Length: 260
Length: 167
Image (cartoon, rainbow over all chains, first blue to last red; front, side, top):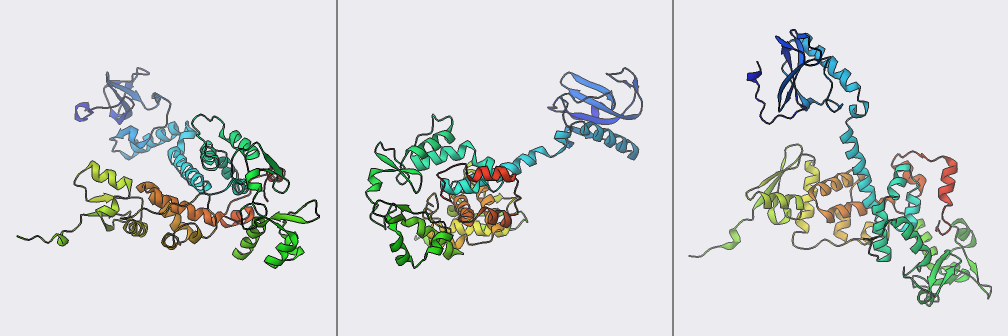
C-alpha cells in the first residue's frame, strides 16, 4: 500500500489518512484494524497511529494542506472529520483564519497611517479621538518619525521616542517657522512660542503670522460680535486697549463656513 | 530600401482582471508600476500579467492614470494638505481623475498599493484626507459608521489633554 504513495521531499508533519491493516500502533502498541489511521511520514520512515493516539507534533491546528486523505468510505470520512474537528477545537486561537485577520488589520492601519501624513498635528489631535483604533494608529512610531522629518526637518535615525521629541519641539520651537530660537516669546493666543523673526510680520495681515484687530476684522470680513462668539475666535487685549487676533484664525473659520 | 518607423507598434501588456477581462496598455505606460516592471524585467517575454484582486473597472482607471503620466512625472502633493478641495492640493487633472466615490477611491488605493504605484497611492490617500479634513469627530463617526468607544470621562480627558490645541 505504502509503495503507491509518492512522498518526494515530504515534511515531517505531513500526514496520510488511510485504512491500515496488519500494522501495530506506534503509540499504544495495539493492532490497527481496518479503520481510519494516521500514517506519519518523516525522514526516518513511517509510523502508524490510531486517530485517537495521534498528537500533533507542535500542537498546532491541522490545515487542509497538512494531510492527505485517501478514505473512500462515507462512515470513515465522517469519523475522520469528527476527529479533525476535535483536534482543531483544542486550538481555538488558530481556529480563526488568523492570517486573514492580521492582513485586514494591517491594511486598515497602513491606509490610515498614510492618510495621517496629510494632516497637521492640530488636525491629528482631533482625528485620534474618533475611535480607539484611530487613536492606536495615531501613536504609532512611524507617524511621529515622519512628522519629525516633515515639520522639524530632523534626522530621525537615532531617535528612540519620537512622540516625546516631537512634543518637546512643539513647545520649544517657533509655531510658524518650526525653527528653534533663543529669542522667542510665548503667544497668549496660541499658547505656543513665536520667534522674533516671525513676530516682525505681525503688522502685515496678509502674512501667515499677521495680526488683525477686532474692528478691522468686522469691517473686512463683514462679521459681527455674534459670529466671532459663535466661532470661538479668541482675542488678546494689548496695552493700547485694542483686541487683536491672528488673521488666519478668522479666515479658517470663514472657509469652514463656506464649505458647509 | 526605406523603413517606415512610424508603423512600428509599441509592445502592449495585457492585464487580466479578477473577472478574467483583458485590458491592454502600452509597455511604456505600464512600466509606471514597479510590480509590472519587475515582472517584465524578470521574465523577458511577459506580455500578460494576471491581477486577480483588481476588477476591470479599477484596472481601466489605473490604465488611464498610467497613460496620462507616461511621459511626465505626476505632481507631488504637499503634506499637510492645505484645503479640503482636491483642486487646491494638486493639479486639475489629478483632482478630476480622483473625483470618485469612496469605494472607488479605496479600490484604487488597494490596486495602487498592489501594483506599487506610489504616486497613485498618494493621490488616493490625499483624496481620503480631503474627505476627513475639516470634519468634526461626530461627523466622521456618523459618515464612516464608527462607534464611539471612549467612555465619556476619557473623552473629556482627551479633549483637554493639551492646552495648546487650537479647537
